[in-house]
Length: 408
Ligand SMILES: *Cc1c(COP(=O)(O)O)cnc(C)c1O
Image (cartoon, rainbow, N blue to C red; front, side, top):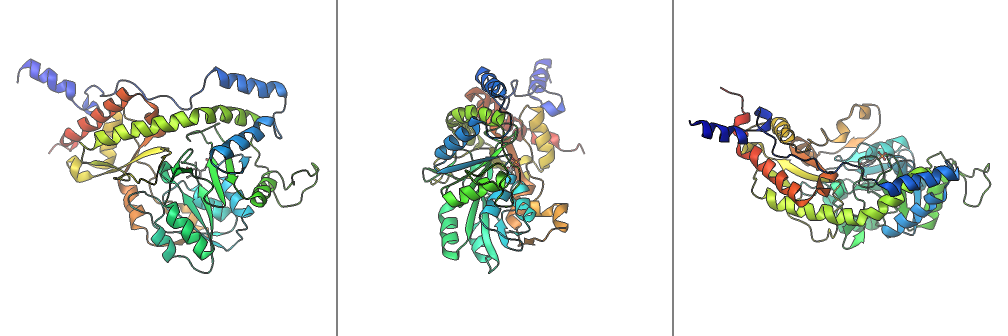
């Protein structure tokens, strides 16, 4: 082989095997902030209302609830307590059964356990990775009180079937929208289909203040109940040392709310950008048989996808038999910020050995965890050129996957 050919070959060599990385730039850092955030934080600082309810908290509640099509917002300390408070305020009692999906962050189920109720895991739809409404219907019994509906990756669950099912069987629905800021089902934003919509503002989420959460609801009594629980059992208009219900302290600070008000301003444009970049990425991935987006076909009822994650499935056969973990290493070496996602359905966590729960057969959830590959939301805020380079990086690893096999 000529020197020239060797050079050419080494130029294209996989980065994991010593070649140059396909991507030379990182996607935008997350979170995004600018001078207006410094100023907003400074205003709270100088107000000296560091705790209690700074006026920015009420403003966030108003604006965020309106954006998600709900009459009431209750800002809280995080998206785990928001779920616990929603379940309590909705009247879920110890021993009640609550159906939850197995493919989600653990809090979707542990919030149920924390209030003494029993999470019941049922399988997902293998395309949307959301609760499968048929499986849910099959596992409702006379102890079932509620369903925690997660909009995984920002793709709304089938709210047509799930709301109909909840209405028909007299069940409450709590939407866990931690992945779904700005997501829409039939042009209506998620969060007000159920009794409560619960959002997280934790550091990785599409709107963040490092930590934080909010509940939205259209029911004034539920809103008052949730607010009371989150604020030491106080009632609206009551005295500071008057406590009418068993509550806790789950208040959000003014510093967090001030940051979140700015984030909310940026959110609509970011939702649009992520959707546009995802469309481009999806089109590019059609050339690569071993990586399929979930779902493979877009659902027309999803008029906005939140894209907390860009979720794909890995097909080992299409990658020359190379394992997913090895391919992910190779993709990361090319500069792609991919991960394998949740390592297992959450019911496999040690903690459930000590806490009552029910697991129905979840072959689809098990299968998803063995094949998932994720790109994080900030990658979808990159420019178009980065997306094109990302597609080229996926393609490079796919084309040269056989080089990742152990040498005979
Ligand atoms: C992040 C997350 C939560 C918990 O939110 P925190 O604010 O981190 O407590 C709950 N559910 C899902 C699906 C999440 O991704």
